[in-house]
Picture 1: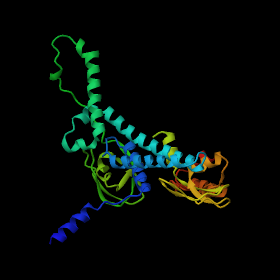
Picture 2 (picture 1 turned 90 degrees about the vertical axis):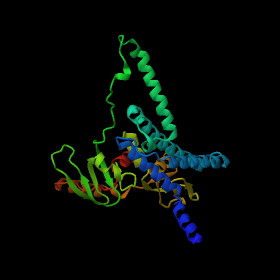
Picture 3 (picture 1 turned 135 degrees about the horizontal axis):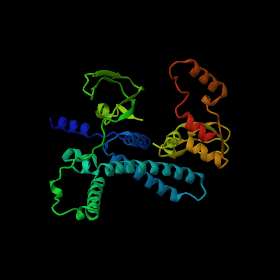
Picture 4 (picture 1 turned 180 degrees about the vertical axis):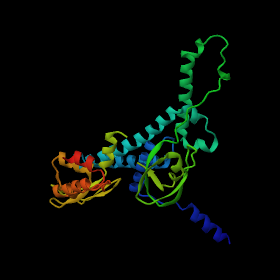
Amino acid sequence: DTHDVFHESNLNEEEEELTAEEVLAKLQEAWLNEKNAPELLNPQTEIVECLLDEIENMEENLATLEKGDIRITVHKMEMSRIKFLINSYLRTRLDKIQDNYEFYSKLEGDQRNRLSKEESDFLDKYKDTVEGLFRSLCYRHMPGNFDWSKVVKKIPKPNLQSAVFVKVENDVPGLEIRDTAGDGRDETIDLGRGEQHLLQYSMISHLLPDGAVSLT
Amino acid sequence: MNPSEYEYLAENEKILITPKFSHEPMTLIQGDVGPFISGLPVSVPVWLAVMLRQTNRCAIDTPEWMELERLEECRDEEKESPVFTQLPAEHIFEIANIIL
């Protein structure tokens, strides 16, 4: 009996070993999705860290080669390209955080997982800095009895109803498209593999984490 | 997405080149390339092809879809068809711009 329990837990913990090539492909997909989605998606911190390790290893290897070896140029170019991808991915996320900092700082618990630890710290600092700026620039000079804590603010949030181009990676039968204008024009459509559609982001956002669709 | 980002994506596509040098296979993070045998066509990513051509180490072979007849066929098909026809290859505009 105990043998079976161990066997099962081993199967659950078995991680799929991905090749560096596959990790890179995943980062590229994450980058495209992040660029095209209106809201912040799940952070792919493991992928980023894995690639940063690969780059470091590559740099160490290159140091051992003779100067002028063509391989140095080639590997350096590839590393630049990967660094560009990582940079762009992280910057896109930071831009999204800055654009809607109030909304993201109000997230609690599970939803806070959308931000990595570093991004969370960045958000806190950014919020303090911006609010400090507003305070010193104008709040201080507001007439007399103005009490900011009594103001009920409407916080801008990312527009989940924006249209996105969707590329279908795996078949998705029976996708429900709800009519957000309330006119009762609800539809159910089937997405076939390899098709491209223009859809509202909120209708397909649940399909993104599994990779059933990707944004282009 | 700005143009240089589309170019980045296009540069990952594979293209055939005829190298002017010989080298054993190179293990890049994104996969192996090679072996390079002088005079024998080999498939590499576009970014590598461009770099090798600039340093005069290879000649880029015209991709199938860039043959004049093929392009004329596509153009005629597109004129006759009432709906969009399939593009001859992904990223044709970016790649054509890069290698021409």
